[in-house]
Length: 380
Image (tube, rainbow, N blue to C red; front, side):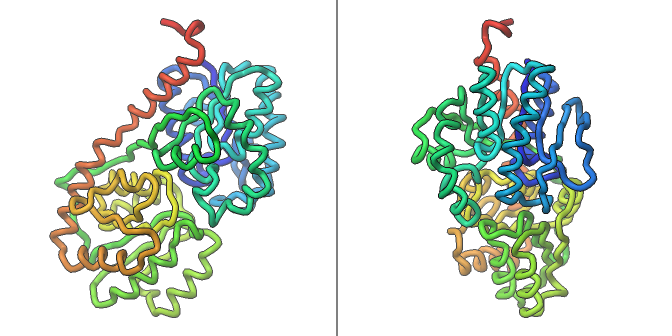
């Protein structure tokens, strides 16, 4: 089967949603699928490349930041990916179109499907669902909401990455959906190789944007000066200047390191040298950073939002805190920092829990979904 994938973010451009698309495409390719991807160009990336047997086309959309797409760049992606998609279809003739993110990828996919009669599916990752990340997309949806209903209504299948997003989407789009969580495991470590750091290392990984709430990382750690710890904050974004000023004001420069945007391999390296993952997000789907922390055997301090609730077993491998509850985050971190043995206990429990999040379940679910679209052609 041939699948033409549309995703405005695809590694190294963008965040977790693009990585989900990449991991899924790699898995489906191993099953014999032929896949091409239309994504966004950035920097000196090639405009066309073979990546693990997947042909990736990158179109120029004036994207200024690798970690964040502006409204203008996404609208340009809609226009240019539409024409690029038609060009590829004339020569390659895919069987199915797959949009990662109902906005913006859903728009060109919907239009192309109307013209060519090729069926399409949508994977909704969170930011494309009204209300899922209001700090980031509330203004956008005021303008685009009327145009999104046909995109959702005419898809042959819609996938949500968590129960939370499915329930949220149903408030706006009365369509059938199925949930396939982002269960892509990362390289893990052996329990017998798990060694605590002295002092413990606390890590944050994600965009420096309002919905990720990175300023609360600094605010919480400032209240825990009496403990011996070091912290690393991976990522970049609009709040970076605020974070830098706050760290300086609170005199924490010697204890909190800011790395800026890092590669996937660098994230892996930093996680392997850490003990506690602290992510005080206000909104999430099923964050890949948290999945990676689980697979790397970190104790988890996460917000009780989205798919985070599936990753933490309170009292076993970490803490779930109500979003925005500064005292709750401080108390959770204090309990871990005051009991080094508890950190090790929770880290081992995270490794054990991570075995439930195996990638093959995701690949199989999508394989079944695609096979149901064209059973007469691909039977047997």
